Length: 356
Image (cartoon, rainbow, N blue to C red):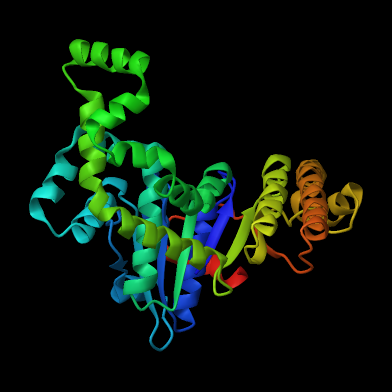
């Protein structure tokens, strides 16, 4: 598995899709997955939308844009649907129809499965585990959310295991009377007032939810362990994607330290949207003189001035790449040039893929 991590706005989704396409062109069977709630991966692949299960990109669509895949190469893509994924987990792990309905119809579960915070991490754990265990992909390319959320995703398997094996869950799995006593009289009064105001017996719903969930707890735990092992396995690599701007560059350094501390394998550094145009070692006056015969002195001077501004950005970007290379111990970072327009189709992804 290849997990692309980085701050928001650096083109990480586009890089993930371009990387997956390039691997497919090399003859691999590849799935690219986004757990970012925004629907940018579909746009990058030239599609209106993506399904919540792996969907193969039609070879005819690729061929129409002049893209040929290597022998045996396939490109698959999906966007995570947190609620649907959690529903599928419960359905698969709980064979008893009545207990399954109790979970799926419980108001606590409905809130949990539709809330963005937490539910994406939980469902992403399950989907990554499923893709790795049940599908024969050569490589899974995972496009994670912006870095702070990406760190939460990386830590999620451990947090989930700690919760499932902790005392707090055992309180809810206990009989409701015991649960109420453990919460204490003061908390019980709060729950009673909440029930009168809203008509919802929150404590009772929580107890019923976790009691029904007891049958799938072990399955969730096994998946969390499986993903934790996968994230730390030597076959998994974390590619840090950044841009030359100061803030994303700092985030990249922060991410690298976190990955190193967690013992996770870094698989490279990609610096995207790097400005490479400019004066190319000449002075502004020299460029104006070279352009003057064709453009005239006035226009040549304005063009040279614009190139001087671009040159300043190119020198800043080059300095940032050197700094990141040194601080992250990446002697050969992959540098992707700033394009003149946004990538919005497969042909554009192929252009980036050639740089990758």
